[in-house]
Amino acid sequence: MFIKKFIPCIYLYNLHAVRNLEDTSVVDTDPLRLVQRYMENGADEIIVFDMSEGDKDHEEALDMIKEIAKISEVDVIGGGNIKRMEDVKKLLYAGCARAILDYNDISNIEITEEVSLKFGKEKILARFDDPAIVSDHIDLIDKYVSTLILMNPHMIRETIAVTQLPFIVQINQVALNKLLEIFAYPSVCGVTGNTINDNVEEISNLKTLCMDNNIPIVSLKSAYTWDMFKLGPDGLIPVVVQDYRTDEVLMVAYMNQEAFENTLLTGKMTYYSRSRRELWLKGETSGHYQYVKSLTADCDMDTILAKVSQVGAACHTGAKSCFFNEITKKDYQEPDNPLMVFEEVLDVIKDRKVHPKEGSYTNYLFDKGIDKILKKLGEEATEIVIAAKNPNANEVKYEISDFLYHMMVLMVEKGVSWEDITTELANR
Image (tube, rainbow, N blue to C red; front, side, top):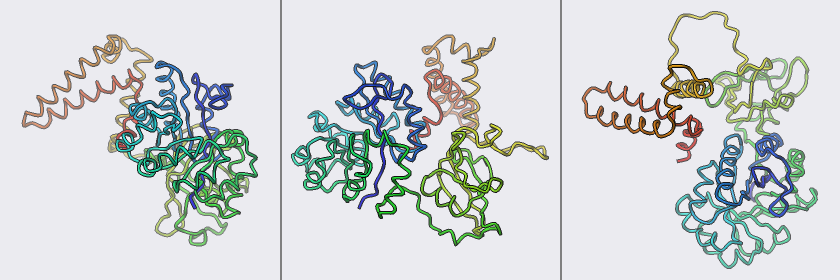
């Protein structure tokens, strides 16, 4: 039986989230706000359908999908407006983990092999209304598609009869108590559609219901049981929390067994408040959730190190980290963190663009525009080539530094961040 996923949808039309593919009434004017709501309530993935019309609207929709993928802590699956391989590429490059081919459109069937060979079978889903479409192209689907999306929940048995592939069921008007019946089918790996969108606050309860009925759901698996930790006399274990990107220590808190198990279930850090003597889901009041990236116990099994993706500030004072009261410090040179250096320089360049400074070379480049920036970038690239022919490696270092600075000016001009770059490199 496949692990079951709860997958809300964002139907993107005119940069707003609308009801569904047939109903363009606005659900939320800010799709990013909807992403936060879905994540906070335990969505396992998010599907985004691009319903734009025309090239300009399509490019704007792709920009929005890029922003959605950037803030989402779960995989984003993109669909809509696919006519050729380039459209799949744009969705994946925008940050989507997978792309959906619409098998009700013959052109999408025709590009299946091409896009699967280019990007990998695991990146490709196919949606359909009638299982006969799957039956007619079963050899192609089995070879080049990883997962299916059934648009008609009344055709589950017929779909199972023609394929062994896992499939997501899109449901728009099914009562919540019917979800367990749908999940009981071994081939069903998820549910999506308006039934999930409209009841997103119930995902946590539905997951508990699934667990009570031995239906496998997405959750973190622990290599250690609670009784394997060495607890304090109060039955608690301290948790040191780090930002997973920078390794900055954010805070220290405590867990009891219930907090530990809730953290594994939800993927969001949950603690036990010693002062209030109650469970404490970090971010429940402030919105500053901590999404778990890893939990590691120390050598004595009496402390947990949590690496998290921190939304907003970790400290109740509004500071990023709780550790800011300097007690004493020796005069020493901290080693440079390459990513932090890049981020700091990029921040200075961003600030120059927003707050111009007289005599600033950076502002001179911005004032001259994109052609000047590109000209300088080309010149610096050439300087690297020339310097590389020189036996003195220092010249290469200087020229690469000049090139990187001009490249960062271009990044700011085009709205590209270092996270965009590192994510793209990691995906490759």
